Length: 240
Image 1: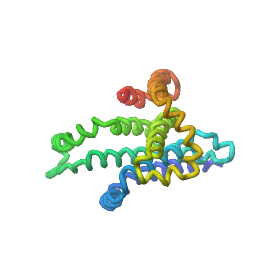
Image 2: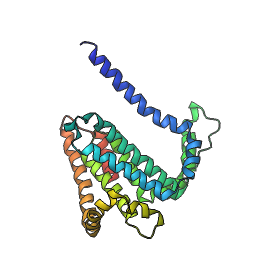
Image 3: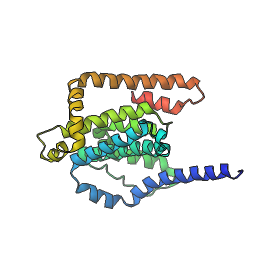
């Protein structure tokens, strides 16, 4: 039917508006969210975020379209990335505190540049501390792929780090709260595999770093292709 393209366009616009509603909702409910997060155990909450990231990433990577679940691929990809973003933001907040809100007074379009510089000066001390940690750089990595074409390799790289966070937490016998995790059936089934991976940690990290470099090279090569991503390529090599 002729009306089908219009319906598809409307569905696409509705999906974009739905994702834009996320930062708007976070802004309006920021105080309630901050109060709720403050009452949560930080380490356990971070691990749970990485676990959800890992599960959604696996759902995107696995060929679920062969069993009629292909409609879940795109939501799983975006859900994995957004969950990792929120987890990293929560980690930064737990490690360095919440960033100070810039005190802006007398704002007008004529002095927007001066106002922006003043706001950056107020944020500079917090940014210097946050940028010294690895979580800030990984946050930049994940944000790059939010606006890019879906990539299995990006999900694999992000999932590897989430797997290491979950595995290191569950296998730590010095933490009392991990006892229930170690007694769970999924962990008992995965524990032998984790022990083998942990023994080859240096090799795994080496291949993970190599995958990041190869992905950057592929972005450069893909500039010659119809699906080129010039901005993604520039941002990614800035990350490397």
